[in-house]
Length: 144
Figure 1 (cartoon, rainbow, N blue to C red):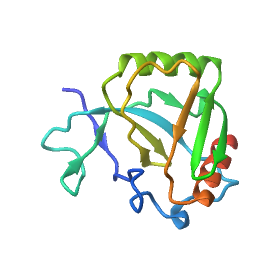
Figure 2: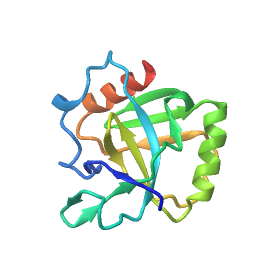
Figure 3: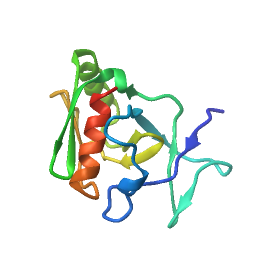
């Protein structure tokens, strides 16, 4: 049986993402990963408002795939390097019709539904609590 692990859910729905007090300062390195969401078994998963998210172990993409990150308002644009862009296209092609989890420092910040293959080498985390949080995430990703 494949194992999965769960993280506390912090969706990008206003009011549910972590507060800026919980974020590391902009100068700190942050850990980034994009994970596949799997069906939880009865022994795993954290339930929040009748929602459970279980992630398949091992990031599909991590910090090494990032070329740069840029804060734009309450959003973070993530630009992948060449290898990361190719991997991102393959991941989105293989996960079309499914959700992925964007995890930063052990917290889920986005659960995007993949509509189609994304070949432009970019990902977006949008709807963060405020611009300060977006800047801290972008700065942390750039200081990897």
